[in-house]
Length: 460
Image 1 (tube, one colour):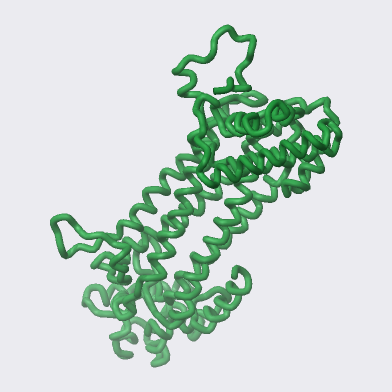
Image 2: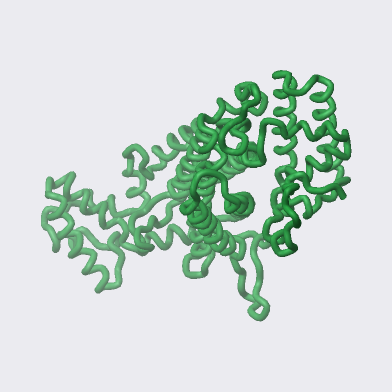
């Protein structure tokens, strides 16, 4: 085996086995092979363009790198832990392919700028895939909303029944959350989209390189401005991890509702058999394991963000080997978020909703009490606080009598306020309550249908 080109020749001894064990990252960063080759090809072409290497050397390097990529994709390559990382593995493979001329590829660059270039390219590529999955999930939610603009259910605050809403209104809330996640991802990519290649170790290089050329080749907006900042910068990793964490938090909120709604006490949703599990001893159970696991994985994703912040906080400029762990953290968070989106999307796309149960629960909840208070304000010109006091007394009476507010007769209502008229009875219906919420963004079917058209235009 060829010696690792990264080993300093003036050392009398090579690294110990224990140092190799902690230093080697090929098991993690081999995932960047395509990005590493893409960056190396752009670098070689720039070296040729700038006459730092000749055209024959450029051609040999580029052809060799493309051949290595084909070999990797055909599973013909076994990466060596002795060569530490993906960068040195590919360089070693290039030596085997084209001989000594491979040594010219590393001219005017360092592994410091190479690794951050690779990781940025990977985040850019995977972010597009992630955005596509988020968009698919929004489509699932919008499909549910379209079918359920008239489906009445309880709306909750403090997990207590608050007011009647529609199922469409509820799921559209998540469409907006995911929409913000997608814009945050877009913002992250904008700041990330500066080319690190050419920063070299930390000081730039004396070779006459053209960083604008490699920026164009690699699809970056422009080169980074400070070489020292470039090689030590992992702000883009932290920002990406934050976006992933917030996506995971939103998915976890949905997962929690799936767990609650599938519980017998709620009975709002019927989970598909192929996305549920049974009990080893209780045959009647249908466990929402997929949703529960999404909740659990969210904790891991949030922890990864905290870990990366802790790695960065104590590092002096510029590069330190601590930064090597950024890839494992990033890959882990991304993989978990990607999987969680798939799981929640499939659960909701295959589940059915128990509309009768949802309506039954809201009808037996006195959730239209606020509508009565609003009627007193609108029709009798009471202050809201006075209206609230009257309505509160009515609700207290209903609770003691174990009755629903919409079951009270007009005579009973008049006992609390003689000015109440028959019109007040109309607002005590959950259906009428929902229909009355006509403010922009409200739950009224008329408004919700408009919102569906807006979100389709905005997000799909």
